[in-house]
Amino acid sequence: QVQLVESGGGLVQAGGSLRLSCTVSGSIESLNAMGWYRQEPGKQRELVATIISGGHTNYADSVKGRFTISSDNAKNTVYLQMNSLKPEDTAVYYCNAYVKTSGGYRFRDYWGQGTQVTVST
Image (cartoon, rainbow, N blue to C red; front, side, top):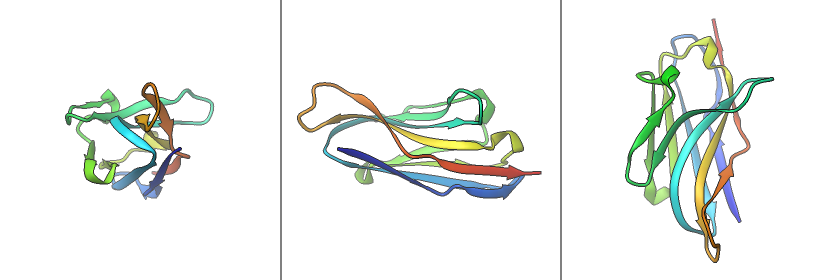
């Protein structure tokens, strides 16, 4: 019913930049919030940044000042601009959307398939 398609991952040297994109499609009645999470092998998935429908943003302390989340509500798309990348930013990045589907009773989380970001030294 709801699909999230991510793009923009890849390999970059430390200090470089990448921009991730994620577009949400399907039977969407309301899209309340979107965000990015990341997961390293053997570790729990962690929040990177979120943005709610009113434009309020929230960032993990580890990325504040380096990453910027933004959205294009008309396109149901969220972006993550990542600057000054560090090797510790290496992870699979997952897009998240908090969506109420057409005919649905409540909001729920949906996830993208993940995109690999690798930062080399």
